[in-house]
Image 1 (cartoon, one colour):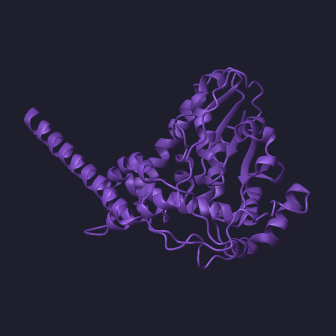
Image 2 (cartoon, rainbow, N blue to C red):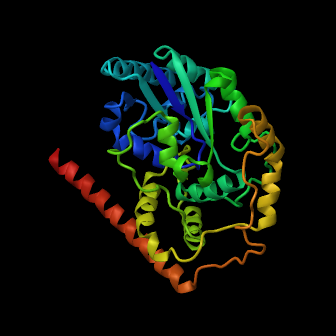
Image 3 (spheres, one colour):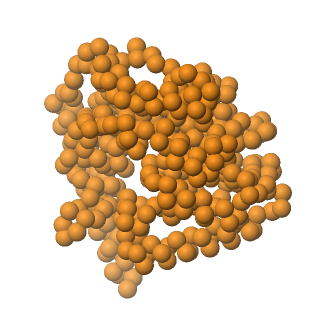
Length: 361
């Protein structure tokens, strides 16, 4: 049986790809392709959690109380059993299983972690293809900045101030070498995340082609996920995140679910304040950040793709000068009123739920 392992990278439409796989599960099975549920219904993030070194952590591990060695080992054992059970139950007509999680890019930053994933999958598969989409580093940083705000962070800048060639998130040459050393160079399928370089100039058409999906006619093609936030909306989110942090610091670091729920509801109403273009940094900053990785990008293109350049180096979409506009005072008041109303509703619902539970007892 063959495994196609889509590892992202992050900010290359992975959420849209996962929606495509999720919504077409039954249709894909008719073509001999399975998208499992045990690693995650859409984003199969459990693959990354399983493979991460025990001493490392992220928000999933904190939320599910997996920081202790015993808890992590028990979780890994249970996940292996669930994965094996689901694979064993597949019909004989299935010859390919697709896995997808952008966290395989962002979380697995060592050879040992990638090897742990390989050992997990190698028990059930005789053939592998690792599929990865690469997007120009400056574009990834800008998109990541917006995503950080959506998840409660308070970034001080778009580009990492101490970025260097070895930066795990942006060093694609290091990423590809890491996966190549474990899964084999011939088993890597590298796609460039630029419209004109995608099959049919469409991400989902390109993914279907790369994943050997032959019949597209009866498949559902979901709309693009994770749309961009305007500069104005990002300003509101940054103010919110500073005032209502995602994590409590005392008595110990833990997720503040009340603030998370407020942010989730607030985002649905953010369109009322979402005016204007997205936030773009000055052109010279973008070129400067990209130049850190330019030579290694070219080396990657030469060794793995047989070409001179990895990305199209056009920076004309960026402004030469950025005017930092802040929301009007009346808009800030309106936004704050919306946030207070949402928090009052959540607090009231929580009290009613607690009261209802208490009366039933």
